[in-house]
Every structure is written in C-alpha cells, then in structure tokens.
Image (cartoon, rainbow, N blue to C red):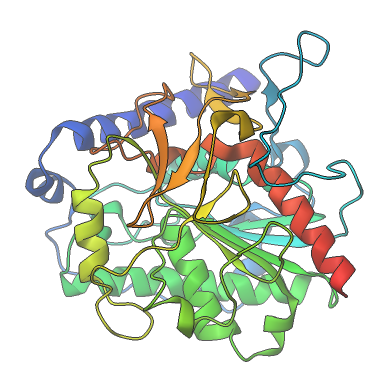
Length: 390
C-alpha cells in the first residue's frame, strides 16, 4: 500500500512538472489559451450545511495520524555530528530559545491551486488528480506549521488555474464559488477548536487569496479577530496602499511581533516579473482601486521583518526535493533574500530546486520550501510572543 501511495505522489508531481514546463516555454498568450476554460461558468450546487463535519472533507485535521500530509517532516541533509551546524548571520531573524515550548495554537491552511483543467471553471470534489496534488503540496507548504496543536486544511472546489490568467467575468465567478467553500470550512473550524485557542491563518497562492478575503470580509470586526495570532499569506501579492489599510491587522514589521501579516513572492535573478506584475497592477485592491505601481508587501523570512536583505548564511534550511521527487531534505545556507523596490523577494542566482520554476525566474512554486526552516522558527517565535503579550 505504501508503495502504491508513493507511485501516486510521483505521478502527481510529474503532471505538475508538465504544466510548469509548458509555462516556462510558452508565451503568455499561448499560456492563456492553454489553461483558460472556453466554456460557460456553471454554478455548482452549494455544499450541505454540515458538509465539513465529514472528516473526508479535510486533507488535514486532528486524528488523521501518519496519513495527514501537513504533519510530514523532512530531515536535514547532514545529521547533527556530521559537520558544523550553520551559524545564523548577524542580520538573521533572532531564533532565541527555538526549542522552548510553544503554546497551543490551531492552523487553518488553504492549499494552492491543484486543478489545471480547462473542462470547467471549478474543480469537482471528486477529481482524484487534483486531490493527489493538493496532498503533495501540503507536505511541502503546510509542514512548517507542525508545532501547532491542530492543523486543519479543507478540501474545496478551487478555481482552476486559468481563472487567474484572465479578466473574463467567469473567472471572478469561479473564485467567488471557491471562496464560499473556504468560508464554510473556516466556520466549522472555529466551532471545532477550543474557544480560547489562538488561530494562525495560512495559505499559498490561491489559498492565500482566500485567507486574505476571510480576514477582510468575515473576520474583521468580529469576535474571531481577537483570536487571530498570525496570518501567513505567501505567494499572493498584497498591495501596501490598496490592501493593507483595509485589513484589520498590520504587516509584521519586527521579528517578535504577533497579530500581523506575512507575505512574499520569490524570484531568482535576473528577475523578469512582467506577466506577474501586469496581472497584479490591473487587479483591484480591497479598496476597489487598481493596485497600479504600488509596491507589494515584501516580508523577508530571513530577517523576520519587512524589506531588508540577508545573506544565504541566514537561511536555516531550504526544503529541496529529492531526485526521485518523492521526498526532500533541508539544506542550510542555500539562498539569500532581499526585497526590491517592487516588493519582490529576490533570492540571488537561480538555485536548482527542480523543474517547477515559472517564466521570468519566478520561484512561486517554492515560495515556502526556499525558507522552510526559517518559517518554522518564525511561527514558534511569534506564537510565544503572542502568549507572552497576553
């Protein structure tokens, strides 16, 4: 059974790599043609009001044990004793008492797009390929949050990849439909965790967009706002002028701050973010205005603060996929990080992470794996700060 599962994971990775290969070599217009559905939007039936009471509607939740993809953990490339441990740079974020107990908290993590088909605008819940990809992504993206007492990651009828490449009205309808599922899952999550349990909201790419909308539309001004200890919205651009002022929490300006928002978008150099910035500039912010040339929020995971720069020696561990694509290991000191004037997080020369790099040296797929260990330390440090402040 374990071997069959491994084969499924490898097949899912190969399918994703095929998509990334196409994106790397096709022009923007051809990419749009290849992935944007040409069919009408068909509204899916609303989920049953008790849908998320079913454990099968969750990729991660308490009680799943070793089958929970968010609880997977990598090992370092060299075990302790095989060589000197990496020494954090003076510019690195403080990691004081990294082994000190972390107070209990619960994570609500929304996975990124794992449905790439043109057949319809939203993924059917029964699409097995999308499910396998989602579980694979959670292994690399949600696993840094493993210090949490509870990690919840819902299944939802996500918008297809092409919905984020077009301004067609069907795209907004698909994204709105996906959000309704996420919103329903979050409501059940809040009912299920302890009433005093602090909450960390997290997501990547499409998942980060839904998390930000939750924060803006549903959490702001509600009793739940007082429970939000941290928000990690990685891989989705947040406008400093058009998004942040409308959100109930600020950006994380210091390493020991809690109750704040973290986010970044990774590019190797030379960065060519043309298509990425074009989509960002044309899209409206939470204030309803186009984001234009307003800088993107750039949190540097190596310094623990917004903007700034840090050398590769500050990187405590990058999660690099293994050669057979079935697992990965942590490699300290692999990439540096600095924020540019656009708010992009630049990681120096292109590291060999695998074939999932997008056009323009866009390391979107690896936003979290590039800084896996630093993110893990960041979460623990901020949750201790949250508990201390209260």
